[in-house]
Image (cartoon, rainbow, N blue to C red; front, side):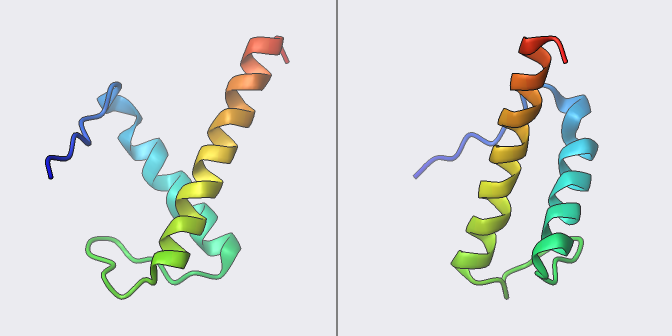
Length: 66
């Protein structure tokens, strides 16, 4: 299966990484730079889900002009 993880805005990579580590910390998940193969699928899903939730909230705020 081919994966396409190419960033649309490569400059956003650091901001996304920062968000990922911040959310992991808030959820109590021990995330470290590099390989995190010891995470459960549930933990990884929580982090990704909260990242999407936060990005949607940010986009809604921008669209509403707040």
